[in-house]
Length: 400
Image (tube, rainbow, N blue to C red):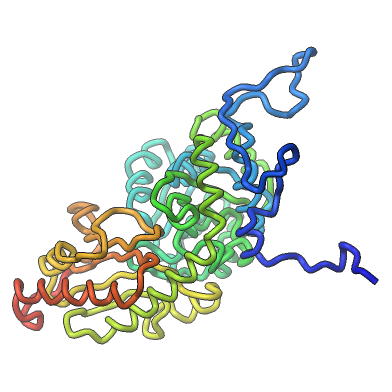
């Protein structure tokens, strides 16, 4: 006797991503969804919209499938796409009210940290930066009745600090605040923050979700469609921070290969981290997958199936040698961003400027889909060339 539908196992998330939830076009039976470029939709004779769509800003059909897929992958109830990761992140803060207290990770994406200092504070938000890996410090920063949002990024860019999501959620909720998690690096392949108690998940979809360095996009996923979520949705609609339909279509294409890309990058990053962990020209390798990393135990608990494709190395001879190392790579590309199929290297202190908290000797690496041995060889020769230029690393000052 054949099984009824209730007995058919629900496909794994990897299968759902590969098939973009398996939807087939109703009219053409196409497996690839259409791209809807229209900016407006016809009204009914009575002035209404039987289709539920009136204008592209909130209603373009090309958003539907990537938003639905991300909701499923994150275990949320709704998803909103934005024109960039910054647009998604700032929509959360802009949906708060003047005077609201916000606690945010000290180690976080530099552009968002700068925006909070330069704009959010001047608009009346009371933003406090704390070491969210220190749960005592996080708890001490809470102001019940005033703290409305706790924003954490884990792993935190570019030192990959790990914050305990479940513990942070308990602390935030005890103060009647929401917990939002920037999970750009972990992706839903490795961590589902909503499962650990978070209320909102943010992604710079430009990075791993798209994965091909050709789409600028952001995404928010919520646990509950409450009044705050409706405010975020209204901000997106009225503020106009919308993704173009072609970018949404490309994003869905990228999401189909998300699991294989993230797993490959994670395996390669671990191999590279292990190789350089005891390297004579490297003082530190910052990677959550190393047992010696400070947040390894928490990462092993809340990251399933890998530790991500991002790592940083600190060059023993200091900042000038780090810059020289980046200048001498031949296969790895010197470029800003992360999560693409090509491996990237960047001297973050130079990018962020004089006020950066990033050590001068730190190089950030985004590991792509190349053969790990080729990436190791490239870094080896670059470190060796920098060593010959800058002398004995043991005699050089450490980057601060």
